[in-house]
Length: 262
Ligand code: 0L1
Ligand code: MG
Figure 1: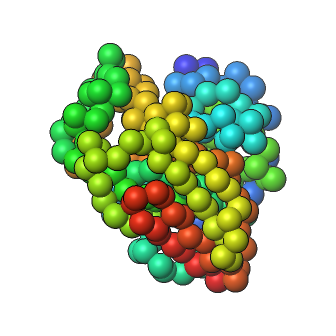
Figure 2: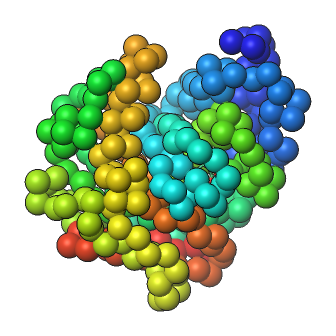
């Protein structure tokens, strides 16, 4: 690791304060160009510890930047991983208060809920499908704390991969009852389709994102616990939203899930 424990703690406090006070910041690698991957995930871990100390509960995990559309949009080349806590959860059809967010965007995702734990290394799509209880549509609201979404991957990891809100809903399906590669995905904003995709846009198969997460955690001596909900990553580019917008995600054969912004 390149950064001291004190610097990691300071950067975690800075990024979490930006989230809680709804203000942006230049990317942290501007001042810490030597920051490495372990530092980045350590900062993310300290943000989680700060939230847990205030009574938050972990409700799941996320993979991000798992589609070529998202990687191209953000000018990066690798997936990243983060955590989901209860303060991010939004109910189906509920209204998100944009005054609590900096510059929100929405992403259409497939969420997995596991019946068995998954542990890497060596985790693969087959193991993920065997461990999956059900899959369902989800909308992630991302809200990078970095000014104008200008960042590099390590800065994004430290910022818990821009996580801010998410909703899941629609029809939960057993993984054997849906072909997650060919399933069609339509994201509507204010009644108009704004992003179209298929499950295969996520690393060829959304379960591949869950396998990558299990292998990432395995390298750190961790696993994805049974019962976890995991967002597999946006199947299309992210779409900016503002107060007054409504968004609806329709996934073929899996119903729809929606959110409003005020
Ligand atoms: O969920 C994700 O795709 C991660 C997003 C991180 C980068 C961004 O803010 O677009
Ligand atoms: Mg996402």
